[in-house]
Image 1: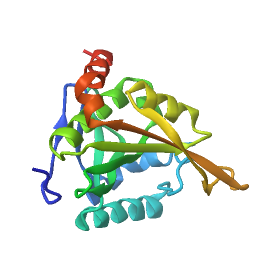
Image 2: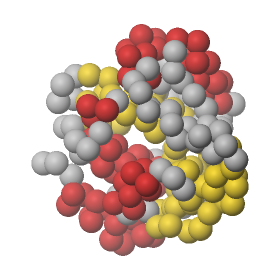
Image 3: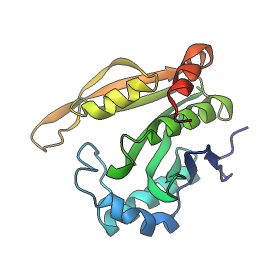
Image 4: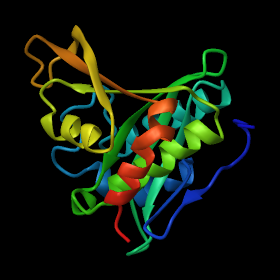
Length: 198
């Protein structure tokens, strides 16, 4: 049974996910300051002050049983690669959202994300007992949308003009995607597993 107070470590031979803490600020600051990391993020984590606020906020949300954040470590190089989290966790409806995912540029396109998503989907459906995982992205964030579809997510629709646009000139739509427990167990788990780096 899932417990917000427990420090879960999820890993395979490529990636390790462990609970995000303030101790990780120094490890993540260089990545957080990379250009373009926050282009499609409404909440920014660049700079020491912003990153501290960013991490403090999600730890508070974990204590309030609303979120569960992870730091991502690439085990191939033993480097901190970025962050991700479960948010909008609803244990009554067995729904959650997976988001606030960002990786340093050197880790993008290396297979790391697929391993992370496999572990997180499996954790959500088996340990958290979720029936639905929602995901989303700015409509302009074509790379992120393609990545979510490549791990088995289905596009559902969009929230029209839901957020300020990335260029701060007007409003942007948010593309909504999801993956369901039945889909995961029936086929998508094996499909994604076949795409992982051996």
